[in-house]
Image (cartoon, rainbow, N blue to C red; front, side):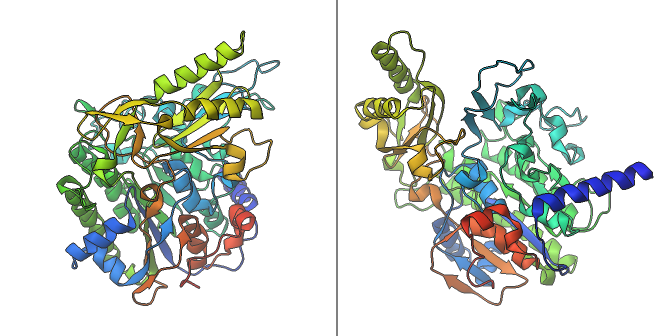
Length: 528
C-alpha cells in the first residue's frame, strides 16, 4: 500500500514538472484524435463529394474544415505526430525523422563511455523491438494475431536497451521519451488528473510519453512491420486493414471505459486516439495510388471506404455510450504522400549517389573517411556529415547538384534525372532555423524535384518525408463538442496547432506546452 502511494506521488510530480502551469480544473470532456496517415485535404474533399452520407462526410459537415492545413517539414510520421501532440516543429522538439543521427550521443551498446567518440544513429523504428518479426514486438503472446489486444499498454518494456543511443553524461541509454526536448499533451493532461491513451504502429511511439516517460497511461503499439504472410502488414492492403482494425477495437474498448484490452475498467480517457495506415499503404503499393486526373484509384478509394467504416464505428460507439455530446473528434494526418500525379514519379537509387559522394570526398581529401555519417532519403535527402564545416557542405552540395543519370518511372522504364533529383540543397541550420550547436539537425537538406522517390527498387509509387504540397497538404477537421455547425476555414494553419487546441478543448492551458510557448503556436481558428 505504501509503495503504491509513493509511486503514484512520483508519477504525479514527474508529469506536473513536465507540464508546467496547467491552469484551472478541466471539465468532463474528451478529445479523440485520429490520424489517417497520407490523407490529403483533396482526398477528403473528393470522398465527401462521392459519399455524402459517409462518416467522413458527417464529421466534415458538422465541423470546422481546415482546407489549407500543412504538416511540419520533414513530412515524416515522427515529426508529424510529435508536432500534433507538442505544438512544435523539429527544431523545437528535436525530432527530425524516425531514423536520424546525433553528433553528441554515443553509439548504441556503448558501455565504456570514457573516451568514447560521439556520434550515434538514433533509430526510432521497428528496429528497437525485442522481436520486430512479431506483432506483439516480442512480448510472447500466444495465439497471435487475434490475441494482440492482450499486448502491454507499456510497450517501452519491449524496447531493446542495447539498440538505444547512449548519453555520454550518464553512460545510460536514452529512452524515446527522453529524446524529446519538450513535453506533450498527454503529460499536461495527466498533470491535471485526466486519463490518457494512444494507439500507434511501433513501440518506439513511447516517445509520446514525453520526457517524464509516463504521459500515456495506456499505449497500444502492435508492430506494423512484423511478419505476416510473405511480407509485413504494409505489403498487402487487406493486411493493413486488419492491422488497423485491431487498433480500432482498442479505441472502442477505451470509449466503453476499459483499457485497450477490454479487460480492466478505468474510465474513458480525456485524450486518446489512433493512427490509420490503410490509406498510406494504398497510396504507395504498385496496385494503388492515383489516377491520371489526381483522384484516388480503385485500391485507394476502397481503402478510404475501409477507414470511413472504421471511423463510423467509433462515432457510433461514442453515441451508444452517450459520449458524443462530450467528445470532440480531430481528424488529420501525420503526413501526406507524393506524388499524386503518377506520370511525375521518378524512382532514383540513392545508394550510388552517396557512394559516389563519399568516394569523391576521399579522393579530394586523402586519408579521410566517408563524408556521410548517416542519411535518410525517402522523398527528401537528409544527410548528417562527419565533417560539419561549411567547406564540407559546399563540397557535398556541388557534387550532388552535378549528378545526372537514369532512374525509372511508374512503369519501371528508364527515366532520366538531373541534379541527383534535387531542386535545391540547403544547410540544415539555415533550413530549420536552428542554433549552430544543434547536434541533431541534418547538415544537408535536399529538396527533391516533384515526383522523385529515392529507392533502389521498382515497387514503391509514392513516399513521404519531403516538402512538396503533396507531402504536406493534409486533411484537418474538428467536429463534435465545442464546435457549432459546419464552417470552412480557408486560412492557412499548421497541424502543430492541434496540440494547443486539444488543451483548450479540455479547458487546460495551451501554454503548459513548452513548444507552444517557444513557437507561439495558436489554437486553431474558430475554436476560441
